[in-house]
Length: 279
Image (cartoon, rainbow, N blue to C red; front, side, top):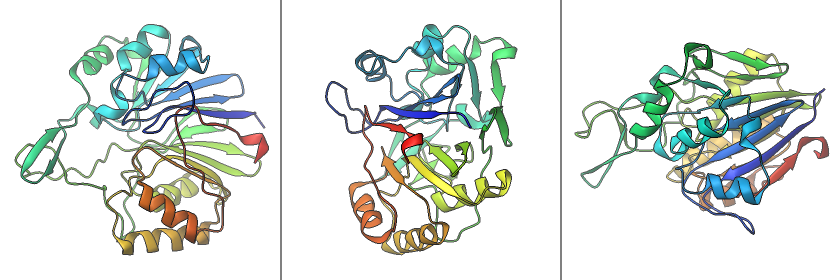
């Protein structure tokens, strides 16, 4: 099995020497491969890779978990730093996206400069994946995640238009999985498809029922008590080895999961590093 080391490059919280921002980016070292999952908003990534001595030029792949600004803002910087990197994302990442609260619409789509940067890539470096896809030996993408549960939703008032006429289920949301001898490492950006839907789908497409660890944003900040209870109940049945909630999970949800799960729950932050051989 390949050695796998995960480093959070962008998060809402930061460790010593790193910057924080509302966003997420994860550096994945898997064997000889290097993958960047998301890029944050664009203000923290450059400083944090310097502080953490990460060479983006070594990236083989850039995976975009979904098309929101806080995950795609540094796309041009990454493409400039890694001129041979391959990009993987769902075809829906460039859709108009809005969050509407209190009657006010906020544009949360991928920034236009990031869309333009993607448009300059040659076809052999741009992969629009709707379904599950392998990235290498023992590592792959979920593709579209079916919504099976009745207690999970996209996690917010999301729409395709600023008038709230077309609800956005964030169908472009996808997760990355890594196979290890002790089960799957699951890496998520915001988990808009729902954590339980995501884990259920990955167990089905990989044939691996064991969840060794989950890391990333879980988008439970506005989750109801019922959703938290149902999520914790399902997680106890799945028996993950470790949970590292980041970004959009919400402090209250992290505290709830820590109190109601049997596994360790460690809050992620910019600079957090996980060597999976130590799990």
